[in-house]
Amino acid sequence: MGFSFSNFLKSKKEPISNQPIQKINFEGGTKYAENETSDVYLDFEELGGFPFIKTILIGDFPIKVKRDGCTLTFLFENETLTIHSDNTDIESNSIKNSPFYISEIDFEIDENQATKIKNNPVLRIEYAIKNETYSFKTV
Image (cartoon, rainbow, N blue to C red; front, side):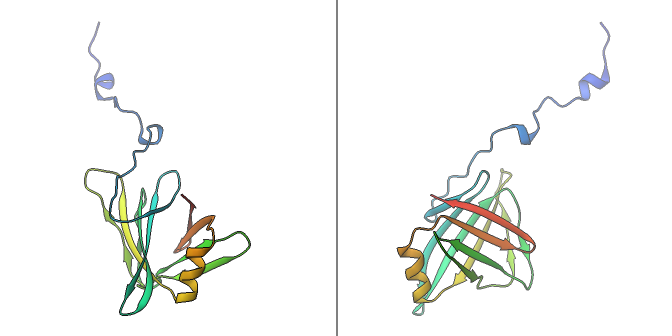
């Protein structure tokens, strides 16, 4: 039996795509929606008498946007509501010792929009970031 460098150098690990993705346990917000690889935490807040939505997106993709910001669309039974991010520059931070990223994105809303989102069942939400759309089912 001979020694072979080719067998020695072969990777023994399974590719990441075949392994189940572990979720991050995050306690800094209210879990609002999810998809196969990402979670969205969403809370209604107020600053100086003005309402806004604070979202935290934990997922397997980084976000880096300059000057354009993003939109968040709430999909109801028969209509949609789209709001724009408060900041035009958005950048994710990697989560230490994991393949995930965390992105904090705030959205300005008015009282009517806040009431509509709180009082009507939301089926899905969608982030539009650059030319990509990320869809999440509410929990």
